Picture 1 (tube, helix red, strand yellow):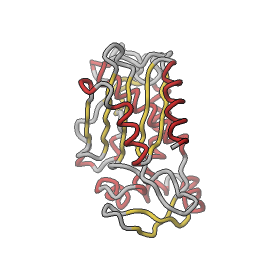
Picture 2 (tube, rainbow, N blue to C red):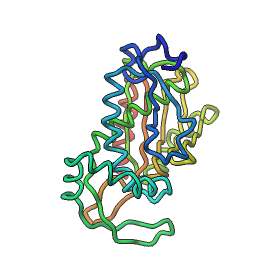
Picture 3 (tube, rainbow, N blue to C red):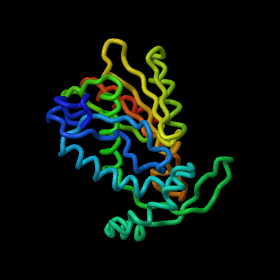
Length: 246
């Protein structure tokens, strides 16, 4: 364990003492050439094991949802081997596959397949990533009485989100790109409370990870989030209501 992590509390649960260092964004999401300089945080054994379970799922499924060069390399070199090691997941993906229509970067439609998507595992991973990134930037664990609310948003929803929230504290806005842009995040924080934050996070630019619509169309999705004290729940509820109305 890094000397800087000795005696620190776990970045994920903010309760147990850390026993190891953990890469906030698992190194095996990316080709070996892109694994340098990924942020690390202190982690306890329980959180480290739980995050590893989420990562095993995401490392297998996420590459199917993007044309990013890193996703395609992992799809060609690693995903089949990972599915052989998890026959249950392999079975679920094969049996849940259905036809869909996706959009290329130039806006043209292409016939493809949609795979079943476990939102609980994906959201569990994103929750831990946000806590880890907050520790990385602030060097302090996430307050245990604070909350995180996640929103998977389409391109249209993301523009509303940015306009409503990312513009609130432009002086505190930070943009980061890791692994040659294979993982990107943007966040801003309240000037009086650094844990009162707003996030946009993207694996492999963005993911076609929301499944297919009733018309069989795939939608690009960006993960967004609020973090902060209990009032964040009210802010998130209002935003969610506006999304449903529009």
